Length: 290
Length: 284
Image 1 (cartoon, each protein chain N blue to C red):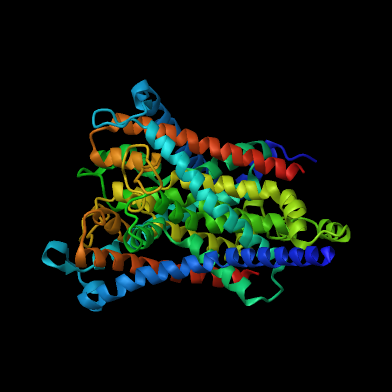
Image 2: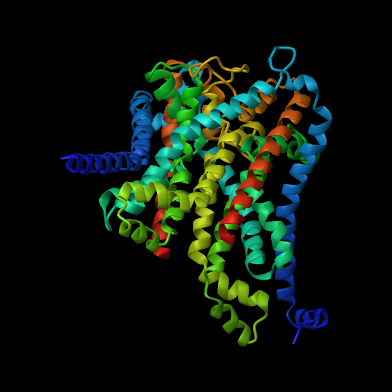
């Protein structure tokens, strides 16, 4: 009798814990669902009220006059992300090739932790650094306030470096050593072998790193808001200030109300859609790789 | 045969483009490391002289923007976030590795959503937390709403690292435990999780780094109140938010430098700790 009850209590424990683990496994699903529900539920009606064309294509953002066009912010986000890619990708890939193929082990022991640390530095500290170091340099070089698209692109380019370097480096290391050695045996120099044979073989992994970098750049908020100038107009040149979608939210959410607040949440929805598309590209690429 | 510098130089003479590639690679590397170093040196150089005992007073006032309350808030925020995220993350990893069968639909969805979650920008988390906890649940600016938001943010990190650590536990451990008559739950808690602990721990440390450095997700959830909170439902700023608030007001650059220095020191320490745990893991 006693044995039976013990066994059934053991069985109860097993089932109970199984259910707890199952619930935990659903936490990430629930999180994504909740985020989508809450944002879309407020954002979509706002877009409908403003008018999708007016909201996405309108070039004037004047909340006081009930003008909510986020076109300048969408363009701003795309521009600074493109700028970050132009700055960060060549430097990142070159660094990754160096780390994977040419770095002496002793030096590697210093550089690798530095790159990891770079990934861990909070974005507010990057923004601070940009504000007190890069912005004054820009002021001296080009005049004006120094807070412009170029400044934002450079700082974001720096911020995505560790992502690109780490992902590209592991992609390069995953290429079979025979490729490299075969190329060397054919008489190519080590540099040529690395760039003409190993790098193309690691293409999809490197591209995945770049896409991850794009995601990070487009979602970056605190660093950008401090150095990009934040004018809500479509920029004419590299030296004009820009406002990104993220900056738009963080600047005005604190005091916005009613339709203005809804329009900011709708900005978040547009940003989320961008990110979901980028994520989709990333996972498609990863699937192709494996 | 050892390649001497002379051999290398003569090769480069024949292949100038290879030399060019080597030079741009070294330049890129110097730029990357140089930027990191100059950022650290600059913050240290500007921050250390601005440190003063007043900055570590227990009370935050309009005259003295003490950072000690923010440091304490950061610790509280980290602890609450981990209390929520760690059991969920490890539990999810246990389900995915120990219970789920191959080709399970739920596993697929859980992995995809975890990946999606890790790509969502922190400002979107902040917006969501604001909408759900502050408005829909009427909690207002509060520690707890910030902590749950952050827990959702670090969940994928803890899940992924725990999963990897659990997968690395040899199957013979499980079989040995079952063979001795232990049930599944007992095997998980007394054999599998303990042997996967270093890996799980490194994921947790990684998450601590992210929590400490986070700003955008907290401004609209936990808010920017500068005092030590009375309870879970009071607003509280962490150290990163404190830096933002100081910069935003624009009057306290010297204090911002000092606070950024303390924040950077924390981040470096967390980084070293994760390296240390990681090394222990590979040695084993």
